[in-house]
Every structure is written in structure tokens, then in C-alpha cells.
Amino acid sequence: MALEQAGQDTALIERIYLNIGYQCCNQGLNQKADSAFALSAKMAIALKDSSMFCECLAMQGRINMLQNKTQDAETYLAKAYQVAKANAYTSIRRKVTAELSNLYSRKKEADQSLRFAKEHFSLLTDSSYYPLGHLHMGNAYYFCGRYDSARWHLRRCVELTKSYGIKADAY
Image (tube, rainbow, N blue to C red):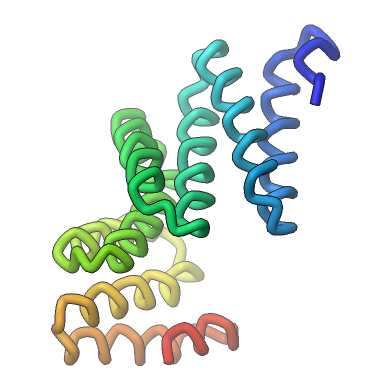
């Protein structure tokens, strides 16, 4: 990928790398996606584009989590969380808190998982996101051993969604 030398519009190239990263990630090409996100993050730093930088970090954290590299995932997601919180990027912060909740569930750190699930739920502004919010809350409560709360959130998730994929995750 030699897009860096392709033209003067660095912001456009930064977004191209970001989109290449998304496409590679969707196709399961995690190493190529990680490289594209790293290049986009590098350009975001040069452009002082903290929103794009935060998005790249979040995606790199997600990729590392998919590859069971929990330590690296935690590093990327924690940095993305800090940047998103400092700059009031609510949509990115919502995504990152969900990923952190999942990460801490995998690491069997129930209190941290619940903390980020609650924060994720508090950031939901659109009711279409509520099923996923309840799913994250249910999972976090389950890992905390609070099965009544987990059951309530998972049932609420199933009631609110029409997506069979989300329903399957809740069961």
C-alpha cells in the first residue's frame, strides 16, 4: 500500500486506510486490517485528528481481542477509552465501553466488566441500541454471579430485539 505518496490530501488517505481496515476486518484478514488501522492511526496523529485516532485504537483493540491477545487488546482499548472520554466522543466511547466489558468478561474480571457494561448502557441515546445494552449488562451480571439481574437483562434483550443473532447471543 503506497497511498501515502499518492497525493496531497492526507485526511482523505487517512480515511481510505481506515476503510481498508474495516473491509479487511470484515473479511477476516486481521493482520492486514491491523496494519491499515496502524497506518491510519499514524496519519491521524500527524493530522491531530483525535477522533480518527480513537477509532483506529478501538479497532486495533477489537482485532487483538478476536485473536485472544487480551493484553494488547486491553492496551489499545484503554487508550481509546481515555481519548474518547477526554474529548467527549460519545459514539466511540459507547463502542469502546462495550468492547472493554467483553474483554473483562473474557479475562474473568467481573467487577470491571460490570463497570464498563453500566457505562455503556448509560451512553445509549437511541432505543435501537437497547437490546445490545441489555445483552452486555446481562453478560456482565452473569460473570459477577448475579444471576437474577443477568436473567432480567437477557430477557429484556430478547423482548426488545427482532434480530435472531442477538437473541441467540442472549440465550
